Structure formats: structure tokens, C-alpha cells
Length: 389
Image (cartoon, rainbow, N blue to C red; front, side):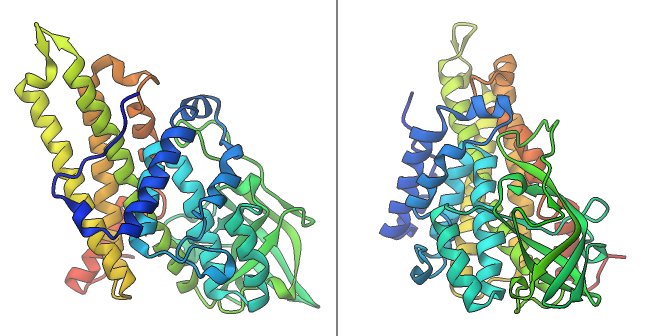
């Protein structure tokens, strides 16, 4: 197999620190050695490669931006983004696994949790000893999380939770769920542990996308959680939306990995596929497609790098994250489809990763805020007028 080097048309490498390059290269090698050889089998069978979880912990990829006192690497956000990019080059399901663990489980515990919660959960989640999931989306409330019907009721020494969540990554394999429910009409966060009476997480089957990822429902039937399991700093819908911002950031970077995979595959194929006595890469229309892909990758890389630098300086706006998520997901899906065209009929075979990326990206474009919702978020920021009903 030809060694993957990536595309860096504008010498973005020169803008990265040595630590950022080291982290990226370590994850790139891990993906090449441990993920690429097995991912098609897992995708075909609809399974997640659980055997790699301890290795991901050893690499320090869970909660990579959080403090070292909790067993985390305390890297910057650009390094985190580069990690997400390399992981999604392997598969969106792999990136989703770590994105959820980091952005949607460890981040809210670190940001809204008590000292006791942080000390107990974060080191275990950082090592991969424990797995978490994030319960916000409901069967009837996706883009409108404020309409949630899951309720928490204060009782003696704790809370009673009733309701359901849907489209939950890692749900069936999680040891703890960060669950959002309305308590006296205010959204609050709760830690619901696996095995709690009345709590179940059936896996959702029949997916044509994200097949190498565990997607579940969460069901709460008179689930009792102790007082110590509420996230004390969580107040209102803003709290889970802050978590989604972290996840959207990781997606914006991640999908560039799928772009790079599709470009690498399409370029190598075009150079080796002979038609009419010469490689198809010599034809104008094929070159047009390759140039389109390379240009959109370069634009997305530069967008992400500046986004990461702003985030590291504490100056990033959620609307900027929305723009990166919106643009990069749309372009990644268009690139996957264009790469499939270059491969012709061979593009649908799992000998190549292109069709798998295309199918995954259909989901990635939708979750953590649809293309349309991010359009309206940015539109309101530009005009000062909300188009939301």
C-alpha cells in the first residue's frame, strides 16, 4: 500500500508547531496501521473495533485539550483538530467515537461538573477504561432541542428521569450517559450510569451510513439518579449547546480527513487507470475534477487552521464554527461523489474507501446541526434578523 502523505498545496505545514505535527503524524501512522486494514470489514458487518479503545487511550486522544491533572494531554485546539482529521480519514465512525467521548462527555463533565465528578470520571474516560455518550436529541426533537419532553423530577436524595433519546453515538456501549432533561422547565445535565434501574440503551440497526459506529436509543423509565449525579454547573439550553459547539468544531476538521482520503484514492486511480491508451488523469475533465477537489481541500484546511487559532485564543464565535461545519461537510460530500465519478464503477466497491466515506458523510452533514440550521445561524449573524420561527 502506498504511504499516505496528504495534500498540502499551500504549505500549511509551515504554519504548524512541532508538537502539532508530531501529534498528527502519530495518529496518521496509527490509522494506517490499525484502522485502514480492518475498517471495511467492520463497516460491512456493522461493528465498531472495540479492541482499539485502550490504544486510543494510550495515545492520549480522549479529551486531548483537557488538563493533565485528569490524565489528559492538555494539547491545543489545532492539535485536537488535526487528530480528528486523521481519524476521519480512517472512518467517520472512528472520529465520532472520540469526538463524543471528548467533546460531548468529558467536556461537559469538566465544564459543568463538580470536583468529585471530574476527579472520578475524567481519568477513567481519558484512559478509555470508561466510555460515555451524550443524550440530547429526542425522537420528535432534533433541530429543536428546546422542545425536549424528557423530564427530571426532584425526589428525596436525588432525581427521577422519564423520557427517551435517539441517534445516540456509543449509547449501547457507554458506561455513563450525559443526559439532558428539563427540571422545573430548565434544561439540566445528569450523569446516568449503565445498569441503573429503568435505563436501557437498545442499539439502532438498519443503517446505510456510519455502519462502523454504535448508534442507540436511550430509554428512561422512572430512572432514579442520586443527588451527586446532577451536573451542578449546567443551567439552561445554553449548556448542551456549548457542548455541541465543541463537537461541531471536531466535525469541521474531521471531514477534511475524508476529503484527503477521497483525493488520494482518486488521484492514484486516475494515474494508473488506462483508457484509450493513456491514463485517465491526462484527460481535461478528470483534471478539472481533481483540481476542484484539491482547491476545496485547501480552502477547508485554511478555514480550520484559523478557526483553531481563534479557539486557542478564546476569540472564536459559535457562528464561525457553524460556517466551518456547514462548508466543510457540504464540500466533503461533494468531493466523495466526485471521486466516485473518477473511479467509475470501481468507485462502489469496498476495495476503495470512497463510497463508504460518501455514505458516512450523508450523516455527518446532518448531525450536530443540519446544513439548513447552520445556514440560518450564520444568516442571523450577518443580517441581525432571525429566520427561525
